[in-house]
Image (cartoon, rainbow, N blue to C red; front, side, top):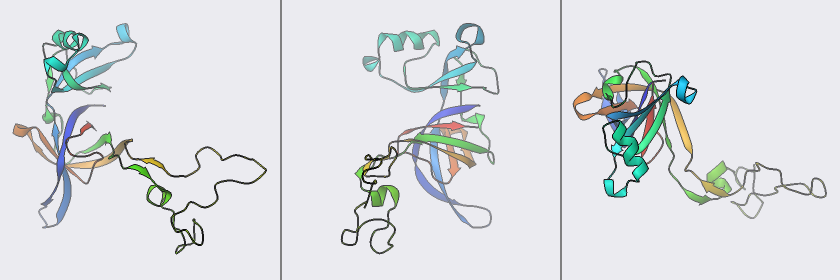
Length: 205
């Protein structure tokens, strides 16, 4: 599956030819450098390793510097492997946003915004007194009963309770590419994608 590494710039909206206002997300996609070519003979599978966003040499390990030097580039902050790449590439090739075309559909993967420790109402949508689905008669945001008594004498795994929310890997599928701005390495994609502004995302065809 072909793809690129990018950075989420932010959200905006554009008007289509019918005058409809469409919400969209702007992504800086690439250019990415091929930092390693995985082969069946050496690695047991085929894949392309792409690197994005130059890393300061002062903050790079010798392993990072040596790995990047083989590809004739500098160390990268974000490195991702893509299997089943459509076209053939060799070490050191630069893949740009021209990989995508307007009108096609892509999948975008990112890390969702972290929301910290949250209760059951925000985390799982419990209702409480008014909706009478969970909670207790005098405590609106309490989770209510979490288990039986003498049997099984424990709380089952996976019970919906309070805890840390967000910070998960999330993939949103079938988002349409509205515009490709090749000179600025920008993709304009319909809808919203996971993650905060300036976070790394993976765009797959």
